[in-house]
Image 1 (cartoon, rainbow, N blue to C red):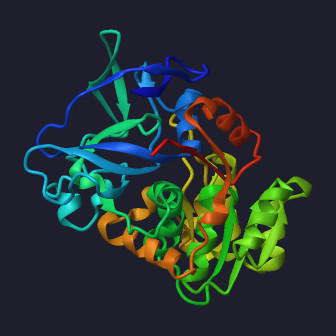
Image 2: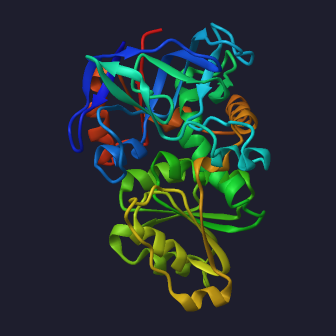
Length: 358
């Protein structure tokens, strides 16, 4: 099968023919229909997070089941599915406690024995490797897609929509009437905005340095925008909401913006870190602020229970209560994947999608 292979840090992705195993017990082979181009993949390409090379990245996708392994009963060949990048084992403490997104019994972020190239093993990223024509995944990672939901829409539900909306509704559990700041208005940040509005926030302030991102934020429902390139964003947010906001979401992945989010919140407020801060980085917070019960929490994958939350998001889309088509700025085939990442790095897009032949 064709796949986009990364051979080292800061190297271009190469389109190569690699081999993929047949599904074993509990596994599914999916023919990829669409895959989103996510900033998290870029972190691994740039060496901000470690991985073993060569590797096939990609973790935001949807496709059609081609084959199933022994014992698989939740899907059948021909089914349309979103592929969740965290597969629940259903038996670890976190899964049993209703936190499958924190599963400790699954395959983790890398497998090293199911893909190969010229006799060399290729790392399978996030248990899926979605920048490829086929994916070998755990059956528990499959979420059914209704026939009237486009596959490129379903793909984005698999990461950016779930991560952003879920950060607001599941992780933070925004209360009705709350004030919210969202720092970073890319694909994930725009979905935090949608999640905040759906949760009943009275005011949603979008913060970014790019005019096109702020324009998108308004389209997605932000009540106010702050251009962080023209001054202190913390002061600007606190001018709009004296004393600070109830919740501030970091959706970029930088320590400086994480610290700014903590400064933006009021006494008793919460800063929610959605972006992937560099693995070796540290965040510095003023100790006295904790006397005011200010807090900072992480959000991983929108605290999703994928078999419950992803169908809910697709139903909201079907009812025209959630913008997903509007997230897609550009479409590429697999050969254009490096161009897609260049557009992402330059801040030109909300989301790009890699489409595959049906």
